[in-house]
Each structure stands twice: as C-alpha cells, then as structure tokens.
Amino acid sequence: QAELDNAYVQVRDDVPVACGMLIPYGLDHAEISCLAVNPRYRGKGRGDIMLTYLERVAVTSGIHNVFVLSTQTMQWFQERGFNEVDLESLPESRQAIYNHRRGSKVYMKHLRSLRDVDAEEHFLGQKL
Image 1 (spheres, rainbow, N blue to C red):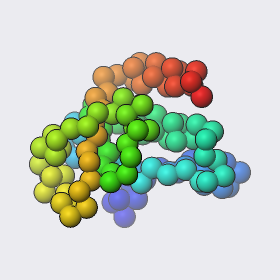
Image 2: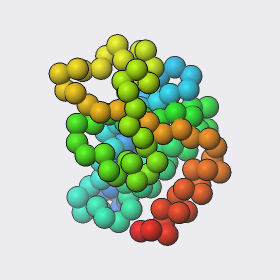
Image 3: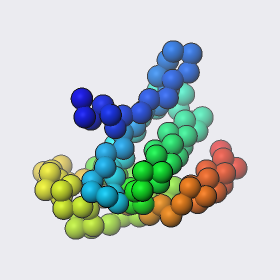
Image 4: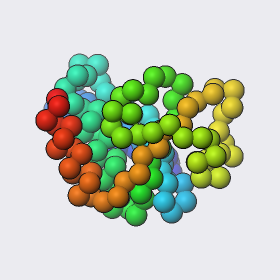
C-alpha cells in the first residue's frame, strides 16, 4: 500500500497513458521509477509530461534531488538534465538496497525551483 501512495497514472478517456513513481528517500532525495508510456501514446510527449509532473511533486514536497536507475540507455534522461553519478551519491538508505548484480547506472538531477521546472518544460515543449 505504501508504494501505491507514490504511484501516479495519467489517464485519457479511461485509458492509462503514462505512469511513474516518486519514492522519497530522506528529506531531499527521491527516486523516479516505473516511468512508462502506453505504446499507443509514445512519441507524443507523454513521457515528458509525466516526468515534469513528478518533478513538480518533488519540488513542492521539498525534494530537490531526483534520481533514476537503469541498465538501459539513459539518453532520454540525459537530454532532460540528468547526469551520471556514482552509487555513493545515492542516499544511504537507497544504497543499502541497491542490487549490485543488476549493475544499474545512476543518474541524478538537481531541481532548484518550480520556476526552473516550468522553464524546462517550456523549452522541451518547443523541441517536441
């Protein structure tokens, strides 16, 4: 149940379009996970909308560092301001449950303010 409190789903005409989770770690970090877009809506900016929404939730909750873990290419996140960091950059509570066998890379983004999130959203919207 606690994990569901951190899950967000974007719905259009009763159809799930995109989803993601924002899992807080301590007072100033949160993991963005399970970010996915319904195949029928890919390439239409829905991932950007969900990511920006999760970033807004983070900032309004007082969280200014969000991170993602993945074994896949991270170009999409890099294009949106995430930078590769060492495992040691994660909060200790997240390091403690990191799966070393999976070998996920860690990418982090610092969020300064809602204004910055809005400006980035506007910039990305111009590129779409």
